[in-house]
Structures are given as structure tokens and as C-alpha cells.
Length: 189
Image (cartoon, rainbow, N blue to C red; front, side, top):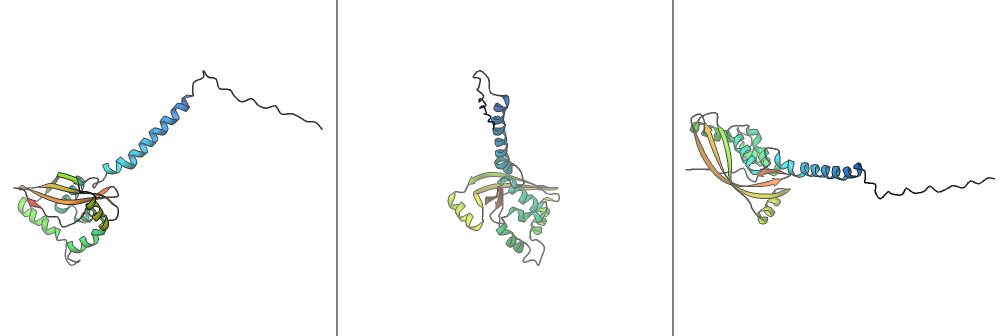
């Protein structure tokens, strides 16, 4: 019987003068770049996109669709919890067309057709933790509540009028929503 002896393979000794490979330097830098890009898409991008990405865009969307756009888009400006009651109120329980058509007709009588709507926030302040706690009881997922003061300029073929209002808006899932559909506007003198 023959026996063979295995010789141990010597471990590679690192040459102290040899520099790390370019790949070893590139990998951590690439990993950091990928993480930074992922963080941007996860956190920053949702707030930049969409027509309800901030209170300004929300107010613009609501009033544009109320007076010049698609009335069917108005419920999108409300949290899910308010949409059914909004539909019931706006159609008088489903027995008439939207009462909001009359608002549009009244505005057309005053300033003419082809209404253009320009919304501008004049104040947008955090409403505080007490208001947020109360809002969270009504709207699941609310993460912020602001008190928004705004002006709406309506311009038609024969004139213009500026109105102002105040309302609470809440952030749910990265988008902003009105906390009520009973918004009162006052004419700016």
C-alpha cells in the first residue's frame, strides 16, 4: 500500500507595496450611489410628482376642476372616507346633477366663459399635533395637517374676480387632501 503525502499549499502573502484593485475601490462608491438614488426615489420623488403633491397643487386641482375642468375629479381631492358623502351631497342623494354645476354657471354669468383658474397659497402652516391627532381619528394614514390660506383668481372672457379661503389639508400616503368639501370663499375687495 502506498501512501502519498499531501503538501500544504502555502497561503498567498500580501505584498505590502501592492495597491488595492480599482474594483475594490469602485464597489463601495457604486453601492453608495445606488443607495442615494434609491433614497431619492423613495422619499423625494413622490413629493415632486402628482397633482396633489403639495397643498398648492391640491388647491389648484380642486378649484380648476370645480370651475373649469372635470367635476368628476373633485372626489380625488378628498380622502377615501369623505368621497361617498361628497357624492351624496353634491347630487342631492343621486337625484340631480352636481350642485357644483350651478357654481360654475354663476361664475360664467359674472366673468364670462372660458374660465381660467389660478390658485395661490398665502399661508401654509403646520396645524400642530393636537389637530393631527384629531384628524387621524377621521382619516386613516394621515401623517400631517396644515392650515392653508389661499387666493383663487378666476378670469373669464369678460372679467375676473379674486376670492380667498382657508381650509385644513392633510397628507395621506404622500399626497395632500382636503379635510372637508364645504369650502367657503370670500371675495377679495
